[in-house]
Length: 445
Image (cartoon, rainbow, N blue to C red):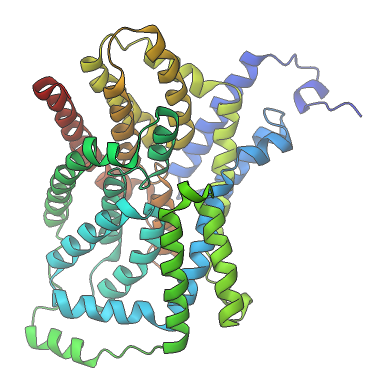
């Protein structure tokens, strides 16, 4: 049976140029609907855009299926199940209480503690796992103190993207760069991690100032005795046996994440396998556990991956990558040009397909020029990872945090994320690229 696209059925000549134009138009339309969240929920908007691309023939159903990053979906689903069991055990209630006791309800201490801890954990776990772990604790804590959770959630997720930039395993673009550029874990520690430590400090200063100006760091419970009474009254109900099992499985999962390059297993496969072990071991009701899974977040990713897959399939990212490479004349100017463009593009679209396309272009590019292209790889890593802080769909961790926050009754608007993400992204990208530039300009290494 011959397969015909909808365009062919209506007698419209199908050309590569037409499909490319339509894929970009669908992306812009989907993006517009996501921004206009007052009229459209982002999940049906993404699904409509994705399946419109299939419906009119930009992608076949098989192509659409392959455009979904199954590793990301499996990772999210697996970790959501494990986190759900830990929530059921009362683990997060205990952590929330401990955080309340340590910070004594001081909003500034809460912000700095959570953002720094999240950044550190994101460097060694993936930032999606860190956000899944930290956001429920943070929302519970801010709620008890009558603080607005949303600014704290946004600040924490911004910190997770900054911290995830530091290592080979912290963010998916780094894994791609490490694999295709043949860089080791230690290469990232030496070339990127010191820059990110300083960048995190600068980024923290930016969102502390932002929140201070907005009044989000103002203590709502001013009486210290009232705070002490609140702390003393908090009781954490927990199931020791269930918590022990959950933490054992969580710990083994994290250990396997560290070893996934050695084991040649995707992080998503590990997460879903360990989640299934946990469900079998605990004999928890699967329906109850699955009711806590962020299905709306997963469906949003499915739709968005297909929309972006349409542009990838028609070669849009390849064209952008080649156009970018034409602007690169030497390694020093290349740091600033490639880093800046990567940040802008990664803030608007998912950074994984662009990084993949750009990495392949850099491999070919390195064979045709006489100068050292290694600085360009680090510029790509900094731009692609830090640029994800620009918009709510710029990084997977942003979408996950938004889903968790909305589920708790605190939706994060596209514009609200943009207001906080933009200054942090601009300052951190400029600062990080300047440090990388200085590293090669001064030390030549």
